[in-house]
Amino acid sequence: MFNTKKIRQDFPILDQKTNNKPLIYLDSGASSQKPQTVIESMDTYYRQYNANVHRGIYQLSEKASAAYENARKKVARFINASTWRELIFTRNTTESINLVAYSWGLANIKPGDIIITTEMEHHANLVPWQQLAAQTGAMVKYIPITEQGYLDLAKYEAWLSPAVKLVAITQMSNVLGTIPPIKTMIKQAHAVGALVLLDGAQSVPHMPVDVQTLDCDFLAFSGHKMLGPTGIGALWSRKDILSAMPPFMTGGDMIKRVTLEGSTWNSLPWKFEAGTPAIAEAIGFGEAVEYLDGLGMANIRQHEIELTSYALEQLNQVEGLQIYGPQNPQDRGGAIAFTMGDIHPHDIAAVLDGEGIAIRAGHHCAMPLHDKLGLPATTRASFYIYNTAEDVDRLVEGLDKARELLTRD
Image 1 (cartoon, rainbow, N blue to C red):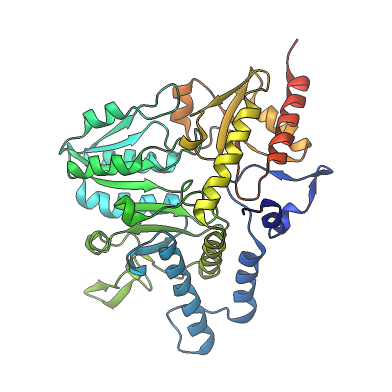
Image 2: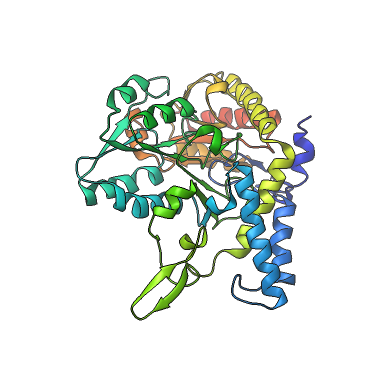
């Protein structure tokens, strides 16, 4: 059984009050909270074997190197990579996508080529492709969204041609919650010779993700959205693709040999990890995926379907509230964006903060999507493993209070 109340006991930050109210944290789409085991794993590194990795033959360095590389193996197993050498540590999803854009993109995208993405992407999966297109003479096309928050798949299919070299798409929208039919879209892209990059920032923390079953070409995700620390993320790609890509950054640790005449690169994955890495953060990241594995990603997904279903039902009863994205909880993740009449989302967030409820208000780094919706901003509640139906009830009560306080006569 998925025991949310027991899970909550593993998160020390949740056992507090804010504005004299019990904390209700509903912003895991931006950054999740951390269990005690993750915090302790990083603390132990700093207290007991803090040293640089790969560069020392003394005991502390060897222990740190082993822990760092063991964390890589944990994360690689979590997404079912065929080998740990396919897992590159980065700072976050954004850096992972930029690595692909600059390393693979500049080497492979030519004038007249087409990159397909969507209207519902996070800026991290839009701006790098716009920049790449500007530098190479390629074109970016954006799959439209329907009024119900789904992708216009007919348009996608019509656009596919040998000119399409890359499809870059979120596996779960951070605003609409939409989960596209990724496996089918990948198969269709491969049929015309295109590669597929998945933005897994929202999906990898919340549902089972198997890169071999999906058959994607790149997967980018972040540790801090899946119980891990900030400053650490990952890029997965197949070994043959990574081997052919030039380094993204150069310097120490990503080289085999340097002379005044030139350099040769290190083997995978270190070819893409220049300089001293985020050692403690990687160790915490590895501990985080172990925690998630212990719960079972299928169980986490089922919990969120049930909680999202309850939240949609309750929020739809709030006067003047409009939810954006699919209404079927099977088709979406646990991030729910909404507006409430002409009340500004920032004002809603401020009132809810006074009630001890932490949510997000703004454009959520998805300005083109909000432009499409005709909105300057939305309010977003995003749920995770430590949230309960009682949290939803508190949210509804807070929204009722916000409406009473902020509605104009």
